[in-house]
Length: 272
Image 1 (cartoon, rainbow, N blue to C red):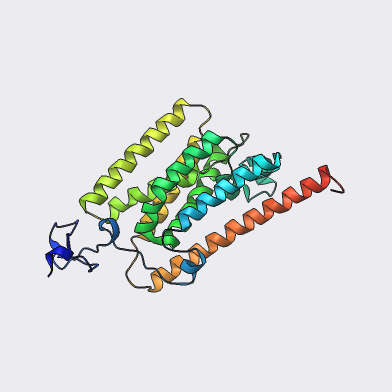
Image 2 (image 1 turned 60 degrees about the vertical axis):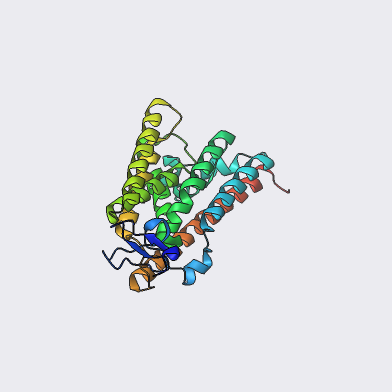
């Protein structure tokens, strides 16, 4: 073995070849950040581009809606896209998804996008695009579902439910891997989640219920999903189907929101 092309196994600290994805001493799967590298093939990986492109797309969509809200000067998007239980019970199911992509205040979107930029690529590198988008969608839905039950009469929006889902996914890494890196990552994310929740209890404008729901949803999906396998077996195909379903639900949610906004505009501004 060429020492210059070697690295340490994060589990047993043995010296292994840099090109291998499994330690020959302890059997641990290794890859990016010391974890098993996610497979990079399949229809959903092409539909939601690889090469750590899922996170830039999420950043782009959030930013585009923020710019659209302020350029249009209309409050229709946040009005019909935010979480609000009376409207959800009246049929506006899409609010549990669209609320996670809408922001009104610059500081709000800036902090959320910085968090997404920092956490998202790590989650995507470890879990792969399919698991990332699935857990992000479940975290967003679960976060605003809990928020709707906790504060039914309050409007709420922002990407923080999905971002707490990313923290939950990284906490789950420490449950699947015994490597020192995984344990450190888990502890850091537990600390960050704890700080975020404490701030939510101190600052009245923070939706802590959405954070808790997102954290639980992201952890649950990541824990059940496990680390990706090296081959595209049936388990990976299932996660591909779930990612595709998450994408379809998200697109349907925004189509429903767009339809409601168009109806609003036609009513308020007839003939334009």
